[in-house]
Amino acid sequence: MKKPYFVAQLSGKILTVGELTAHIKSLLEGDEILQDTWVQGEVSNLVKSAAGHVYFTLKDERSVIKAALWAGVRRRVPAEFKNGDFIAVCGTVSVYEPRGEYQIIVSDLKPAGIGALYEAFENLKRKLEAEGLFDPSRKLPLPFLPKGIGIVTSPKGAVIQDIFRVVRRRFPNMPMYLVPAKVQGEGAAAEVIAGLRLLDEDPRVDVIIVARGGGSLEDLWTFNEEAVCRAIASAVKPVVSAIGHETDTTISDFVADRRAATPSQAGELVVPMKGDLTRKIQEKRARLSRAVENKFALAVQRVRKAESCRFLRKPVLLIAERRIKVANLAREVEMISGRRFEARRHTFQVFAARLDSLNPRFLLKRGYIMATGRDGSVVASVKFLKAGDLLRLSFSDGAAAARVEDPISDRV
Image (cartoon, rainbow, N blue to C red):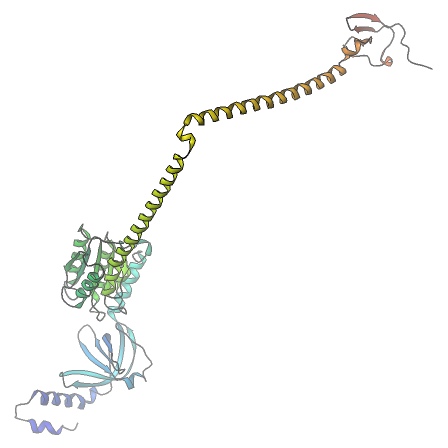
């Protein structure tokens, strides 16, 4: 390997930072092992510039290295990647002199599996979903107008200011109760859980916001911790998850009762516009006033109409009129019932006359005789008689016994 010219020139002299950095850069870029070498790791802190360049970090369980993918090379690389992906990159190790950081300039890349954090994310997501913690039926509705809003987040930064600003703009006198908590790093999960439980037991709070700003997958990992997700799911008060930016997704978003794309949107979700409520109240008050006035006017109208009624002025007239009406109805009922009685009696007489005309005893009165045998049956024909038969002869006024001597039929 050819030795860089300026190294010899610097021997024995005090170096400036720039000279030292340039020397290190020449050593790295002159090492053939670090030229077009393949490195694999998990993608994090992915940033895309307006010019089309992509900057990210490759990491494993031991170390991290920054990487840069220029726009021209990016257009030639077919593989898409995002935070949490496990990829292999080919490139040259170099030094970014302004910050003295070494990095790999990527010339090619390909997928190399699933990153450890992303794999843990997917495993926990599947587990909690199988338990039903994402089910919409278990989500609590947000109160229409909370008496107080609880917030769990870092007291520093733009997140809490964004929430305060939005809530104050929408409802200036809405009480807010902040429980400061770390949202990243060691101990963050425990502080978030403690804040949730404290606000969940606070009678002044009706809804809870859990919030933090955007970041990489590892930056947001506190809200992918199983204990944090279960604390959100078990809260008896509705919880709004406002983690990161709109494109960021955490498991807390799935178990929370509502997800806000940004902390500012969380403020819009939990509280209505006071001006809108005031206008609606005024409108309903005006409608109620008009309804009462109309009801009162109708009542006055009915009273005045009643005052002009002669029966209300002299109730005796109403009683007399009703008495006459009752008497007329009674006469009408009597006439109708009399006519119906006469009609029924006439019908009865007609049927009685018909029955009498069919009665044998009616014929006996006209001089006829009815002959019956021993068994009491009527003798209807001479052909049923023979000499010596005993007969009972019934008259209109009595009966006599007779014996048949010679049955004679009509013979010509």
